[in-house]
Image (cartoon, rainbow, N blue to C red):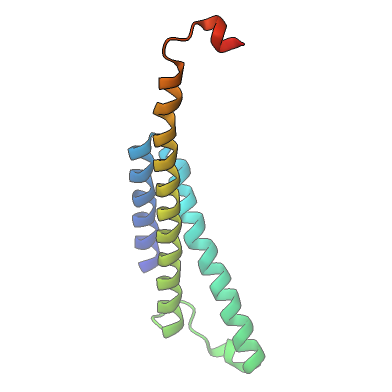
Length: 117
């Protein structure tokens, strides 16, 4: 249940970023969901391999849906991954917006023939 709430929040968080910079909302929203689920899968598989190498019988008694320390750590690390990618995208989009006006300013005064050559 908590993962669903986190996924909805991540989707909306990235959709606001897309709206702010004129990007497609659903694409960035799906990126957020993919990042969250991807890190959850990688962390879950890593923890499963660790448990299997330590004690093979431990996997039979593991609660995959409860509030364990491993689940809480997985949620936290996944949220940090979503937030980190958000910051990277925000920085990238700000750089793109800074470069766009300079290109338009350079085109002022040029005729269509000059810009084609």
